[in-house]
Length: 91
Image (cartoon, rainbow, N blue to C red; front, side, top):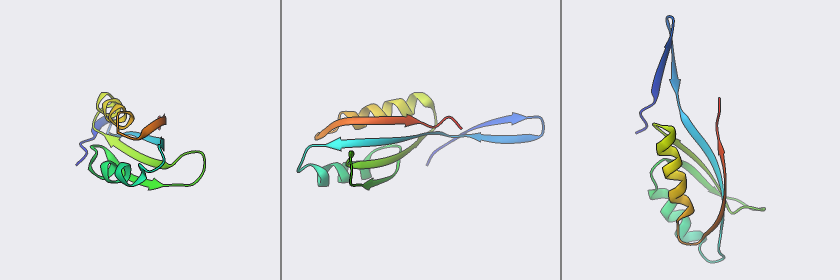
């Protein structure tokens, strides 16, 4: 479960979500093992195998920006992952 930060401005409450989208390239033959590992990886909300320049598209959320960065670095260390493109959500 993701615990978000709450910001209060006057009488209004805003939930702060730390979110990122990541594109992964993997070595040929590693697609199934990467997909299985993504299902067990902290912070991964959803992942999809895709066609095109990248092999996977991933959505991640975390309770803090530091934790999110740590989770993204964990993706980069997965066996079979050759490159990543990370896009941190700003709003």
